[in-house]
Length: 169
Image (tube, rainbow, N blue to C red; front, side, top):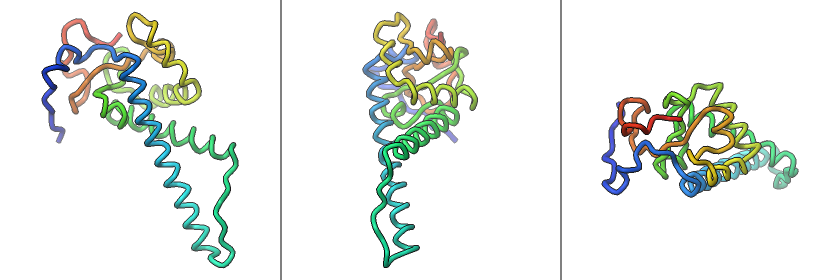
């Protein structure tokens, strides 16, 4: 059962409108923090397993830079894909009142969410295109026909909540 939240009066004019660079960047910063927390948790778990397996010969793991980058990339892709596929938003999007939608205004399907998450993880600078785009689209949005909208509701997109003329581009 999903519960609807009341959209703040100040936010109502923006409901369903394209999200700008600042909102999207803040959401991305929150998502980066989530990924870093997950990576620290993985490191601590790996450390605990090493301690349990060989307590007398224990040393803290020293992962290589390449391994750290690969794990960070993998965690990012899984996190973004799951969020965008399941509810149309990551935790950062939720905090900022954003939702990622396809060209019909619906939650992304798994292949589209996976491709978008890989594109965002490989080319995060593509988000900056939002600053010059008349429709607030990133490079990833243009290529993959997605959009990021202000949406404070907790239910699925495309249920008639968007204001007239605010359908996904």
